[in-house]
Length: 301
Image: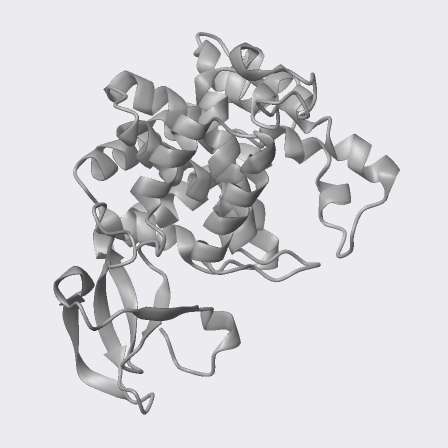
């Protein structure tokens, strides 16, 4: 677990350095550190590092939300890529693109950080960030095309209602379709200055509801839900027994019955020792609800 935290922290540092080094505009970005950390992340996830995936549900502060968002989207996108059967080089390309997908936001950060809903004009300006991002990336020598496509197309939607170009299904690169889903999910589960985050299983319901109008590729959405599970690794849940625990492993065969580390008693007292319960082996124990740690007075950390 310590190793996963270290990798996550390192990824945050690298994305911060990369984005903050956008001056002067004329120098192309040096992506050496990005490629290295993405390879480490991809290797860890391929080996089944659930702890790294669990870190993506953590809270983050106002001042680093863009950095944490990019790291989380990178981790979750690689996990989906694995579910889609991508080989190592595709996973790395997808990971780098996901890690840099919002790089164009550096041009509009002063608008994006307003602590309120944006007006029409401001939204139009924000919607240019995919163009800014793909421009920044195309100046880098030997960069893979897929990385640029992700930055440019992750806000496009299958039914043509996305931006900046209103592309439809086959016109959109598959990597961008992966990042599109992860990007929305990740934004939903974390608070923004003008709204609260929602629990992961609610976010998944929301994605399914949104997809009644075909915004996302159903095949990729299905893989995403299988990989993430209805109760994703890292989220807190209350069981029908009244006990509270943290999901540490999803069961793909029974998405409603993950493995849970039981931490609190029904009286909300912390057990001296946690115990692992595989809900798929307990027919009469089930998850009653998912808990948002920010809204609870229990000491989760």
